[in-house]
Length: 320
Image (cartoon, rainbow, N blue to C red):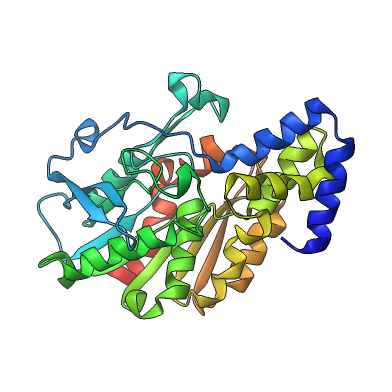
């Protein structure tokens, strides 16, 4: 945190009200993920060719996942799929009530999306990122929105590359939100590891500064961005400006389909997604704006489940 911002935050501490300080601390707590439980399995959508897997992250953190074979049997094509905060490989159980409904009282069904992929001839490897779902805790239970989680993306790809069958498959990525930020960072650190990836679908990647700008305005504490950063530091996390895909996007050179909710109520800032897209190093890239909604959870993360015809042709173009 730059010294000038730190000094401003310390000055803000002297004058902020107790109620506003509680709001600031609550905003910082976003990076302490609420664990979502596995409310669905592949069985719920009729997929029978699946198994549990345990994969070591680059730093040894155990990651729980599923390997699901294509409909009709294992194919030669693999999609590595990851999730957003505070979700897990099955999606998000907001329809089960609090505490998940405090984010949004909706279900997000990633298992349906695996069904679309397996029906189209793809095997799927999906996993819970550290501090999410059934995977192990790490980094004090905090999320770095990619600053630690890149190690999970690297560990999963190394596991695939060492696997006797999966290593021979053509690989694509489906990397969203915090998982997408993590994937960009992983590619930046280990470009050689991802050089053979055919394409990536990248929904809902976001900068935490955009989220903090929007949420702090809603709560009437937008003048305390420096103090939010200080609270993040005190928790042992990263400041908002460090938790962004902008830092790593230029290292992503594979074909990318980015998907964003244009009028997203969580950011109120389509310029953030546009900037990420513009920074991508990919020569072949597309940006799909989801319009006529503000709902990031209900309509953003469920978009592929509802409209596979808008996503699958991009994957097929590079994978088949």
